[in-house]
Length: 107
Ligand SMILES: [Zn+2]
Image 1 (cartoon, rainbow, N blue to C red):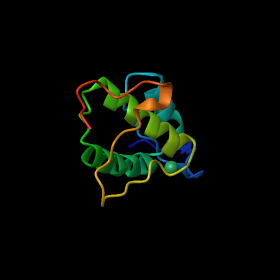
Image 2 (cartoon, rainbow, N blue to C red; image 1 turned 60 degrees about the vertical axis):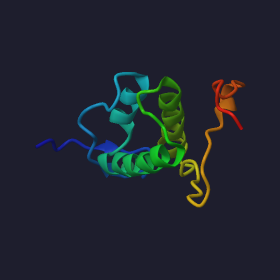
Image 3 (cartoon, helix red, strand yellow; image 1 turned 45 degrees about the vertical axis):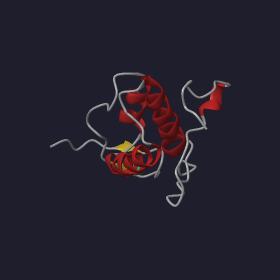
């Protein structure tokens, strides 16, 4: 049992950390150090909605980057993440960096 707590950046409570970084990158390290287990759980639920809604393949690099961006927004900037209108089929705004959607996605 690990009694250490972190000050969670999202909920601003002293809370139990994840114990293990969710990604092997800089973002994963920040989540481990700054986001509590409960907030991460909430993100995972939100992530499932996003994946289902946008039909994301989490192994796809573009989808991963999209999810990383959403993590930044939801957990570090606290804006609640992208709103999902489940009555409509979603589409990712690929243009964050000025890039267009991959070719072959006919309209
Ligand atoms: Zn938290």
